[in-house]
Length: 444
Image (cartoon, rainbow, N blue to C red; front, side, top):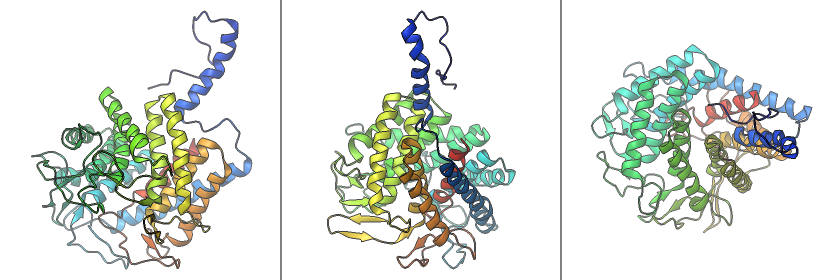
């Protein structure tokens, strides 16, 4: 859909006063920038352009020569189909491990997006392979939604419906449709969306509950680190519903979808962002009272750009302006976890002052995108420096120059930890998406 406003075009057949006609191009230009995400009108310096081009070249090289080849050559289960459920830090494949829904959905999203951006048929083959496995083994045709895990042979294993998992299937299937025009993928994304809205939405207090049985009865299970039954709503699930609903709205811009995406953005603004610190509140009770004192730096910086992206899709200038101000405050709060070497710490429990000092792959990747987005919004050089420093830390420590792919964990000493390189959570999504976000943003 084309935007209504184009900088420099005269409005047709409108009898405005000369003064108004004089200012209309400027007004339209400002609206165009708001609706299309223009950060600022200040021309970038030659040094900034050179730094951005170098960043783009380096992440593109890692994506196409390291990340995607690692996953397409080492993760395909040639016996049972789909992808192996686990590869440890020493490259040992566990062919009998259960296969996680989040892992498989993230692989589908990554290779679908890679095909859309780079038009490489090998990425399309991988995306189609992932899509076919998901449709055959993960989708629950009887009760709707998708399973959390299946066994190595594809039989259902954990049939619970976790809304976080469901959000990734919406996100991945919508992106696959965006890349390929696959109508069945879009239809299935819409079906899962409807199941989430029907069963998980809290009609009394707004927001979404987390865990359900296969037939969508609420379950008290705690799957994301919740500590008690009071932790009924999670920041993590709502964050990933933002990206899922934004992805679906992009390809299915119906009024109902617009309303649900707008609602979840308002939830973030009103309920999940702590207006004293601008960190995200990790767990909350049903009525949105905080039940935790943990600041998660990686989720903070990830949210800072995801909510901005979602707001821009809705093309509401007031909402965009409000969300962008919030985005910068969240990015600044996340900077409490940044170290001088460019790395991002994991989290801090403010109740006891304990800081988790390990560096996880996904937090570093989200830092690159989050601070690049902050630079786009503000033009502030310090944000560009933070983005580039984060990437430089990744190059030095996370890229596995021996076996390919990325290490998933770096210790405070700078050495790789023993966490798996592939598993239920660990996949080519945060790092692959980071590379593709950088490529697309700098292309523009």
